[in-house]
Image (cartoon, rainbow, N blue to C red):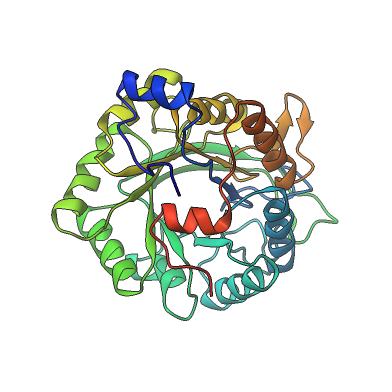
Length: 320
């Protein structure tokens, strides 16, 4: 690969030279197909079962996604997320069969009631993900979830949530250590600039290895406001040898995806982050969002990474 994988995104001279010579690294598209909270009550096209999620991953892969980020749902109550080793194992195995080389990225978010040991089951050797999300700090959120009506499985009334997800330095170090021992690359979910304290702690203790793969998560409550200034500030504060993706929630998804393309970063799309395609129009699928980013990148002369290139860029082993 003739593009330098990581570079100083803050240097205006390097940005101008790379843009003038069309020498940005190939664009990696990650797709977050489901999320851990809302379900088909928010968008009937959101996949809930393992089979639906595998199909969604395949469709996104066909459109150019190189990585899939997955949450498992309780089979009896699909609006609930669950850290179930059997479900993760089945999803990972099926995605690898249908999507050769696609990077499998399992969630470790879990629920506030789960222990740090319960949250990490999706990285155990039996699941064999390539990557897993690593949350470097606590956050709060308050949200009303829509009523889930029959004939959807497990209907329920509207729900009001007022939650805090507690995370300590010890938790983060434990998760990073478990990922390293199991050969899983952390995808570090940076929600605000203060969480770089935790990231740098992991680097100093050699619990994570370069290149450091980060998601600059924009628009999640108590995270950074979803605006260009905060994307620039994240870039300014990120450690050397960082590869960054920009996901953003709701109406901020597309503008900040495009900003990441411009800045030489990478993109996450998917129904976890935004159940709409445009204002007032529900997304038809995760693949629809991937296809739009692919078209925009092509118009901007930013080539897409293949799965083999993405694995090399992020320091992962080649697909078997």
